[in-house]
Amino acid sequence: MRDLLALSMANPTEPRIDAALALYKQAGWELMGYTADDTLVGVLGIEVTDYGRGTIRHIAVDPAYRRRGIAATMIQLAMHNLRIQHLRAEAGADAVGFFRRLGCEVVSLGVGDDGVERFSCAWSPT
Ligand SMILES: CC(C)(COP(=O)(O)OP(=O)(O)OC[C@H]1O[C@@H](n2cnc3c(N)ncnc32)[C@H](O)[C@@H]1OP(=O)(O)O)[C@@H](O)C(=O)NCCC(=O)NCCS
Image (cartoon, rainbow, N blue to C red; front, side):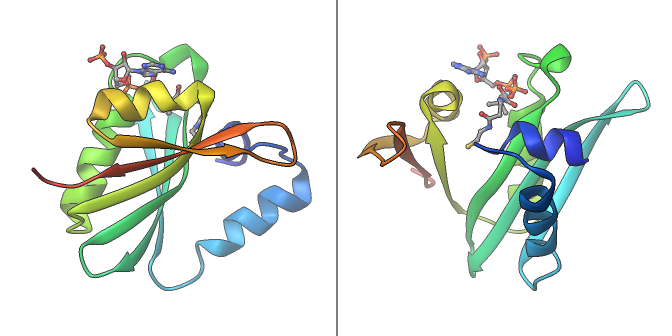
């Protein structure tokens, strides 16, 4: 779980991973895993911010298992199980294509102090 969570973080250090894990002890924060070949290969962390609204806080799939629909399946299952109709995420350039493919509306948030461009991704039922 820690290794997968680290893949979803910009600058993963052990204390930052501990802090990320601690977030999921709060009410409304849900951390889910996806298993294939008896191994944990995907992780999805969502904060249910309001009734029917969720924000993806962490998402990552083991590089050996990418492009098989695992992340999309995790999101679908989470939205169903947590009764989420409106989903948000903040993504870097690497992951923004994935959120576009999901049907999210993508808006640039600009380049931060770290020189990295971030994007707001939002999905609502049409
Ligand atoms: C982003 C990530 C979670 C996607 O996981 P995945 O299991 O490979 O995604 P899926 O297979 O479910 O992809 C669903 C669709 O999005 C597309 N897609 C996936 N990753 C993509 C990418 N990086 N760029 C463009 N399109 C992408 C796929 O082609 C797929 O469409 P198709 O198979 O119908 O053609 C994975 O690449 C990852 O772990 N990245 C590193 C962590 C990260 O950046 N997390 C996001 C932080 S906000």
